[in-house]
Length: 82
Image (tube, rainbow, N blue to C red; front, side, top):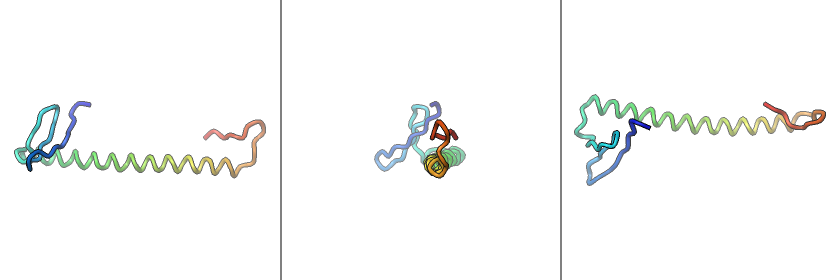
């Protein structure tokens, strides 16, 4: 993926690697720092939403299994496609 952003701690100076180049965060413009903060927020939200989606998918599977168990057996097949 292009546009990768990676953080590193080196000798009390925090740097960031963007497209293979290292930058000292303290030396970035206010605009660049703002954009970096936005990227960090979005990455955090994406991770949170992906975890939530995984939990919801797990719950859906459990509900589908519970539904199958609650239904009377169907002629010929006892599996229900949802």
